[in-house]
Amino acid sequence: TKHYNVAVLAGDGIGPEVMAEAIKVLEVVADKFQFGLTLTPALVGGAALDATGEPLPDETLALCKNSDAILFGSVGGPKWTGLAPDKQPERGSLLPLRKTFDLFCNLRPGQIYPAFADLSPLHPRVSSLGMDVLCVRELTGGIYFGEKGRSEDAAFDTQRYSVAEISRIARVAFAAAQKRSKKVTSIDKANVLQTSILWRETVEQIAKEFPDVALEHMYIDNAAMQLIRSPQQFDVLLCDNLFGDILSDEIAAIAGSLGLLPSASLNGSGFGLYEPAGGSAPDIAGKGIANPIAQILSAALMLRYSFGEEAAAQAIEQAVQHCLEQHIVTRDINPKSTYGTAAVGAAIVATLRQESN
Ligand code: NAD
Ligand code: IPM
Ligand code: MN
Image (cartoon, rainbow, N blue to C red; front, side, top):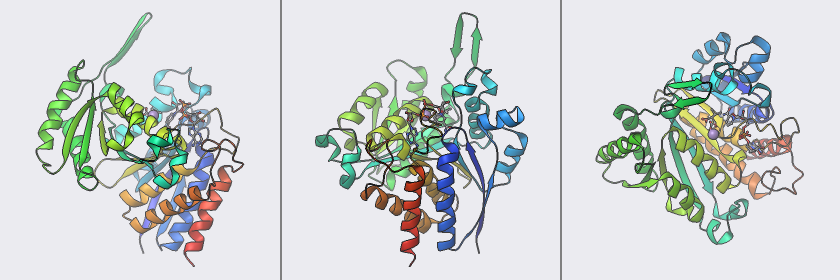
């Protein structure tokens, strides 16, 4: 039988709380769909810093290299923000992991299902029309990884993009659109930025390889506005690293909560890192009220993209939908709800178990 090795890096804040629920879900589907899973935990981020002095210990990196995929929680928090840049959990662990494994492609799918339009904070006039977008975010280039510098009274970050970097992420976006509604909206700031002008030119070239997909360009400021005004106009959003970071939080909020949005970070080899789009949520950490759905859906994306276990991935997604239908949701979605992290996780597990009978 098939067997998969997963490095489980829960990290900080709500990371361990939501990861516990994702693990329960994975164990149920492994049993139900008859595959083997070895889930090996390791320290990362602030938790690793506190224990070892390093945000990404060698042991953790070695485990990741020997695994078929990484299931990641979240890292960072107020405790560590004063540290030197390379020691900080985010820049010292998550960004190096993305770079080490060349995870240039970050997929963040967000939906408003018409039946759950009331989850969205948008006016029903807009939310009732639904939303089904895929944010394709370049993840290993741009301003995150360009030359940086700091003197006493000034600082800089550099944005560089090459044709090769833009081409490979654009191809992913067009190929994804071919399997969806055949539209790519490429996001840039080509009225100001040199990198955006190159981005636009390069995307135009790649579009010729995909004649069945419609391409439009949109400035980032307008896109941020259009997403709220009429999100149903979008299919695939092709973004650079920074714009994709920002728009994906917006997409999550439109869908109902940052706690719902999963992500897959891929390099084209089958290996991947899977994590919620949101962070360690220090404001609610330790209270047992974090939404575990983004972490659980990230596990589903792992089953789909790294392991090809499509039926198991769909079973998880259906169980999540069932849970939303029953209004078994945490407070980020319904402030009046009394369900916590474990109750939502348990409801999803129970649904998966029932379906196997
Ligand atoms: P955040 O995403 O942690 O939280 C933003 C808001 O969304 C908070 O009000 C939080 O409570 C809420 N939220 C996020 N996830 C939620 C969930 N699952 N359930 C319910 N509510 C949820 O962003 P922030 O506060 O700007 O950052 C906190 C820390 O997390 C920072 O150190 C940041 O760098 C880090 N961060 C890490 C990752 C990652 O590891 N992948 C991603 C984003 C931010
Ligand atoms: C995300 C996060 C990260 C990013 C941070 C924690 C470095 O916000 O995955 O969206 O900016 O990419
Ligand atoms: Mn982000």
